[in-house]
Length: 445
Image (cartoon, rainbow, N blue to C red):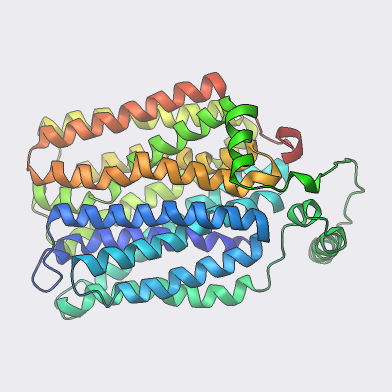
């Protein structure tokens, strides 16, 4: 399950890394001759597609099930990523990127629902953060691939950047076969009056655990009632979010918007910053992205256990607050001329060690704090709006700031990201829900 479902983040990380790494190449005649602003706009198109995909497939996931949708969305991503490799100008590239984003956005709604509904409550935090953190495993794979495929000594520059998109499609093909064997969420089955199927899934899981761990399953000790009449559409979901749980909705949006802005502002344009202000050649960009990705990957795995032991509220506020403060400090040293390409990358590694754990916890927060009947739709709405407000504007904004070649202009962008993270930390402390080691039905039903 972890491999089959967690691949979503690997693929998204792979996609973002590839586009970030090939940004300088796309500006050359061997690429598509794009401007820095157009590269930022293409990244925005990907995020807009992801937002649309989350909304479309999120509602379908609550209606038709987790399993059907995570097969469809992966197939959509696979075909449109291959199409991206055949782009011939800015518009074709942006359109194919948008469609690939649609598949990834749909994945987020279906996958986060399935993961949290199948993970034991006592370990849900660390497992969810760990799986979300594998986004950076995709980044590492994309970095290694770009290091080879973008080297003009090894591969023709006109072909290398196109081949990078084939990697994600090949991984997706393999994972489609893995996902076919995964079960539907028993909670979703019960809610849709399919109790016999839910019982069969649970029996299969218990049998496999007993066989592999030689431990008999515990007798049931909780009684939960589900009402199939709760299965409705987006109107009911909005009522749940805005009328029943307004403070939880505020927390969810603040966490999602701030982390989306931070990540999409910095990561989509990292290669442009290194190239514009420090003269790093396109083929050397992966050398800087790799340690940055490792730092991000370590964050959720090193800190994940604390989200279950110390608690959600303290850890989320701490990771958001630290990353916001450290980003402001990094921006100040950058604009003061105290950093070079290596030390700037080292500073980013520290900032995003904390930010990656916090960003992963944003998805965990949404999936934990809203009821089963609207879980995927709530994830979709928060992700889509958070991405459009916080993420989609960020690459275009930073692309334009970098195009000015003014370090002070880029610093202003860093301060916006820092302020958003600090505000989200304060909102979490005031309104956050403590869901650590609690059954999902205890948190919301």
